[in-house]
Length: 255
Image (cartoon, rainbow, N blue to C red; front, side):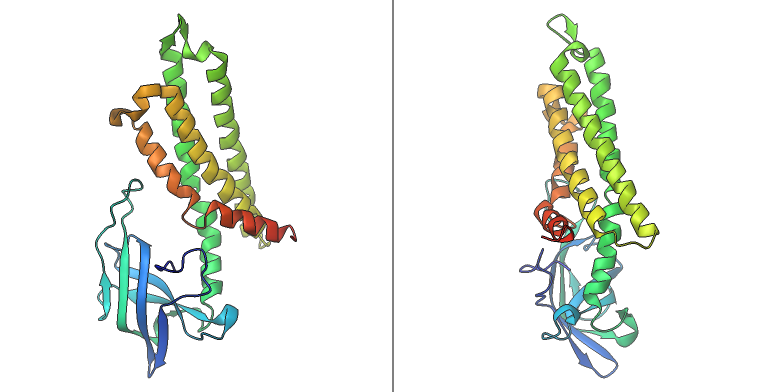
């Protein structure tokens, strides 16, 4: 979905899909495409009816070897290096009618449905990351001694770990609630936005707390703490920024 000039605002896609005999011609550029440099199949969105409002865009499944599709190399990122991201360019790229996902004009509906799953299930990864960091911090404070005491015996350190645990379990419960609403066929948007916001912000806060607990060792690559922080920061940006989640929550509250 993301383009150089369309990230959070998905209603103004510059990529177009012009209907021709038997399919569509795609023209445009997508950026920050997850696994873009190595993918065999791309799910993409393009404007098919500029005046269609909510029904202006259409979703497509496009094979990598389709003429007119060019995938760029991996972007140099500070984190999430296991998931390459890159640019994908479409130039009069013919996509047959049978590669339309859903129906023409249902692009935003397809995207909204995929985002419901992505903003909930995908962020379970960050629950695991937080749990791992807490376990590593607990082991560290039990062994590390300062001022003649274990770090674990210092109240500020224990308080920090308690806050880390609180954030983890609060986010976990919100995530479970969001998935329960999806499974139950209810309107899950409020709970998904709450869960995504809580888990992503907690991931950053917990990684920062871990750097404070480990001190200078946190910046040594052998301990992996700095890597966890670099991987946590993007959680507040991809799949909708934290500010976007707050807007969604406010809308669901009737504001």
